[in-house]
Image (cartoon, rainbow, N blue to C red):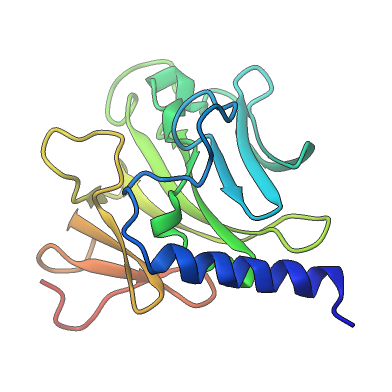
Length: 211
């Protein structure tokens, strides 16, 4: 007899197969019209699970709510909150088309902190450090398995966004079942490279011939 966890895995695999077989909107999060969400990227709706990211500026905490149960994911240091530079909207889940690890019960979401905690607006004072996080949602607990930096003022990491786009996902794609990110600049890598998320979710891998 199949266990509940096995049934959920089978349903999720079937859901992803059906989803992959049809063209989807780039910013589709799987939520039906009327689902409570403050903005696109706040919620991700999966079979049997609705996941909602919640950032609370006063507490400087990032939490994810799964079917009504809240789990703390990150606590941001004082003076580094993204709301101080107007970047809190970058705390968001990636859309379904950019979630290649769902069959492993792993979701991807962006997080962001202010580059500098100083009071001034000098070098990187209004800059941002943006990350992609891989979050395990297996069982009753959640765990960040790894994170990679995809934008940085200090490290001069610049994603290759579409012209006139600030908050979309044009720099992201899926290649060979892995998340890929295009960059205009990445330290020590020539040209405009594309990095693939490593299997342990802890680094980006670039080909030797990155252009």
